[in-house]
Image (cartoon, rainbow, N blue to C red; front, side):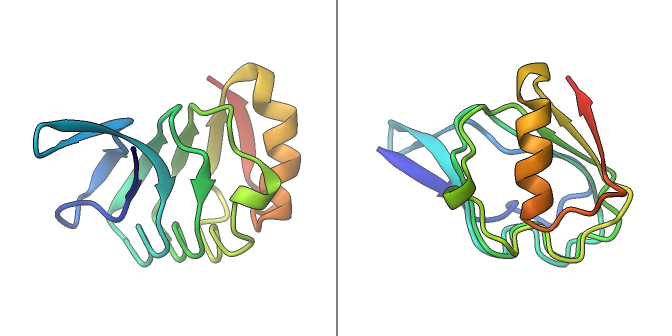
Length: 125
């Protein structure tokens, strides 16, 4: 079974690593989606790490994260129809996107279509 990441348990600051798996009631579930508004308006987070299990990012997931400096994307499974066009609305224009080397070109094109600015830099992990 698969689950969605809804939001940090507390208003976290610094680095937030989304887990690839969670255990609920003794059962292990894979985290495959970042839900709508998961980090919206969070002014404390500086870095977010997205695990290899994530295949979908919903509306406003990172919207208005003004102090976000780095998004580290470890998944190779993100596709055009699985990322909302508003997922990155109004984020810091200087966010550095770190992706797997083999995904750099594809994700750069894809994520720019989804609202990232040309000012955002893409670097290999």
